[in-house]
Length: 314
Image 1: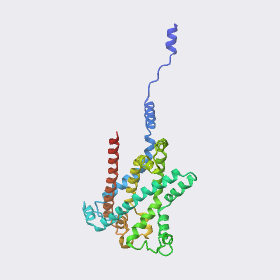
Image 2 (image 1 turned 180 degrees about the vertical axis):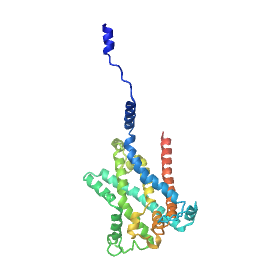
Image 3 (image 1 turned 180 degrees about the horizontal axis):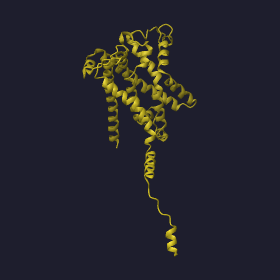
């Protein structure tokens, strides 16, 4: 036998790909794309977010009650009633007014806290811990704590200010008390965002400005503020979305009531009252989708402004 024949006979022939090999290859590609790793999230998201939203949208077109019996389709009647309901507009105004109060305060106080924690020399970890710690408390704890602090006779707020103001029982100060409690509770999250943004500003910008004779206020105005513009927009958007949905701290502070002269009844609280007190689940679902549209409009406006700003800077 010739050497050519031996070489041909001893050569390893390529193996033909089988169906199992193709399936294994497809499985490997899917794993590489990461789809299977996020599949559990999408399953849970669909079960606990998408399906309840779809179910709520269906109920908003019915006269469903809390028992679920004798449900009939009523079309847009719930939405027409919501537009004519004065309590809907009153509760919406309370939520909007709360938002107008608390958002500028959170932006200003969070920025001030971040500047203190960023520029302080000693015990930086202690400043950060003290500023962020209230954010970790549950809403029930915050509501009960500030309910006690705002007591007219033995509350710490009146004791420190030297007043005897009935913060929780008069209309003019009821919503303000919720604003103060919310500011103390939630400002820590915005503080962290600002602190991270401050740490990302190049230090050489401050050094160059100082060499040029710029003072502290000028460095703040011309370096710090412009570099924090994007994070300020994010903080404002997040706080607006959260404030429009204010509920738990206000309800706890006023013992699950609407406050003096119904001055602290928020939109979410009125929705829950209609659903679980008046047992009108269909109407409550329609009201909740009114708030959903408002929140979605705010979020879309924020996205449009951000995209317009990015296009303008290109």
